[in-house]
Length: 149
Image 1 (cartoon, rainbow, N blue to C red):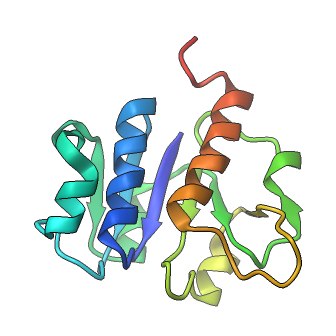
Image 2: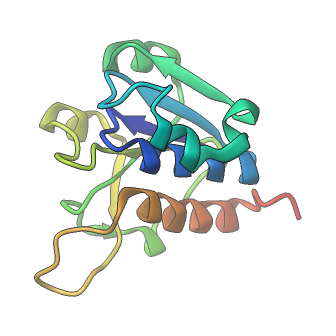
């Protein structure tokens, strides 16, 4: 299981997801460009001392990321019709999360193997990307027995 962050905007969200990855044994892919630098104080503060222990692969572009991944890409998006709770995850899936400000472009939607959403009350826009990633990752690890229990 992996988490891929597409051009993340907010350093605290990226660092939170990296910290989650360290704690749960999940590798992180960062697809650049990012909206911050990795030395950003907010990024370092949110990541605490976990950043040095993370398995992070940085990719200079979407195409560079695609050239290095062979996993099924599961896009988390509010535009999906399929709920993550009804989706069957595999142990080698990559959960793809978009930018906080804009999600992902249409060509990335088209390239994802599957798109899933978190059901929400009507009229609301979205859940924080780090929280959404944690929710879906938790379900994916539960299904695939990836918690190491």
